Length: 368
Image (tube, rainbow, N blue to C red):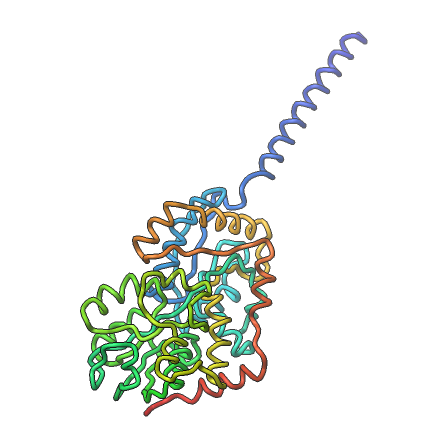
């Protein structure tokens, strides 16, 4: 009898151990399951479809999906308005904080730095995954009186009408500051929700000068406007005459002067003064951080780490590079690091004096 009981006890213990082992295995497997398995991620682009941010953001969304462990579905949503601020604030204020909404932003850095108080959710509280440096190309219609053939002809322009997205966007400010430093009279028309309708306005003659980032300039402006003789490039934004900062890679093969080069050609000296200081401050913040990839405040670390790892992989993706060269004629690179949030937060600053100067200038809209 005792022998039978011992045998039964041993059998029961073995069964319990087996059950415990299986349970541990299930729990361990669950713990190791990728965060994004079975999930859907929305890449929210803060400008309308058809513009440079949209072109880049859709390429990013298409190729990032295969690099995210768990292979979630990735979709794109455009949310434009207020020079990109509407979409950016939506991510911080409304989007779920579980890593299922990822912002692909343009134009937000200076919009925040110039007036942090207007943001309902502090941009510095977002979780930043990566950024992309960039620049802007400014171009003008060739039929502006008396007829413009070279970048230096911009100082001869009569009745110039410059178009933009919003009075506080960095590329609008740099366009205005550049024209003012060169002494070119102009009227400023703003409020276009993205680059696509602004380009149409330029083609219709409602405006005759506008600005684009290099991807859109290469992919859209050159074949539809430059090659047809409708516009010429005037300058691209930089703060050095030799064009050595990061945006130079985007400008390879394009014979366009930097703003300092054009200024020296026309004025015989380097640019200087309060407007130049403002131009530099805006460039250093917004061109360094021309694109921001961000998650809502409070996103779980597991989500952050999974997406940051995917971006590292994307930077080495040859298929992504090949399609980028085909669509936007250069390959975006997205610097990232484990402490990227802290690094970007440290860059989103400007002195009170500079903010005041730019905000006063911003509101003094030229209508001449």
